[in-house]
Amino acid sequence: MKRSEMVGALEGRDDAGLFDRADAVRRACCGETVFVRGIVEFSNCCVRDCLYCGLRRSNRRVRRYRMEHGEIVATARAVVAAGVRTVVLQSGDDLRYGRERLCRIVRDIKALDPAPAVTLSVGERPDDDYRALRDAGADRYLLRHETANEELYGELHPGQSLARRMRILELLRTLGYQVGCGFMVGLPGQTFERLAEDLLFLREFQPDMAGIGPFIPQSDTPLSRAAPGDTELTLRALALARIVTRDAHLPATTALATRDRAHGYSRGLRAGCNVVMFDATPGRYSRRYRIYDGKVASSLEEVRAGIARSGRTASGARGDSLKNACSGQGREARGGTASAAPP
Ligand code: SAH
Image 1: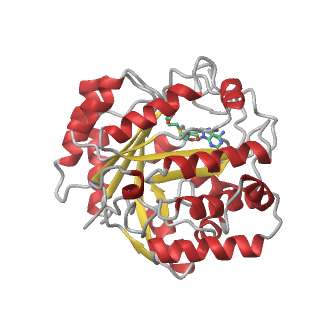
Image 2: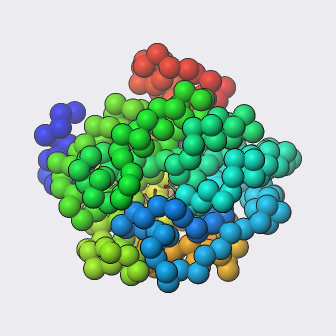
Image 3: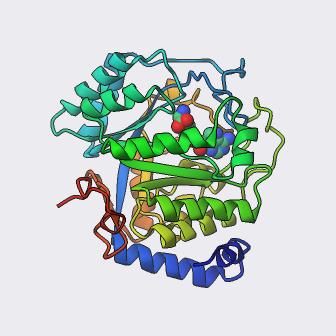
């Protein structure tokens, strides 16, 4: 698919054709299973100042919290007890959880019986931390690239660079993580052309997973008055992501469900998605994890019901990377390792 075709598809030139094609690729490469993951948002403290995010350090209006070791592990234990075998640990870039402290959390979660897959989504840290966390047993790492356009990236992330983000993604892969990147749709200043750059990056990088959701303004950020990302456009981006990655795990995101409460998940699942996350964070913290306004906190039951209504099969299995499972398109074609693929 050429860049100009991507732009045309993003503009909505042939939605029916696009969604059908994405659904067919999803069926062929991922099957009917929808993997359910449990996310624990263990800290809303952050050293970064991303313009769109409610956790940014300049936001004085958010009540900050940090979950204790025992509480995080107990929450993960509840996820496992509910039959879900992937625990996603997410936070702001909170360096107060030092290397050893985070490693102990990962080790204790990996010691649960049965041991879940552990996905980290804790942002940018010293390189040695990624190494140590992998050694401690972390299986996957989610680090959205946010936008593949360097200029836009620079405007939205004071003191950060797209080059560093990309370098970390490469490092994570080298370390043997199953790696997730991803981006927001409808960021102020984002054009169809720029969105096409995100899809070209996905095609080139071939992540094991990608998180893609609409931008949603947060009232205590500099972008509070910006327009939110369009649901249709997000669905088109998801469909294109499915087509260019073929077998990457693509969650129907919480942000998508926030924009379209009644149908967000099911529309995502029809546009190429094969993963849904539920919010396992204890309610008193979850309320304060306001990365954007109105963020829904879907329970496991709600997520399971949504998947069933879509006519698909929910699974709490680990759902490791499917890269290589789809002929000719996987990691082998790029000369990488096959270690992440399930038997
Ligand atoms: N500190 C971690 C986790 C960030 S929160 C990291 O940097 O990776 C997870 C994701 O939420 C971000 O990567 C971003 O893509 C998304 N996000 C943040 N603010 C948002 C907003 N206002 N609207 C939509 N998505 C947002």
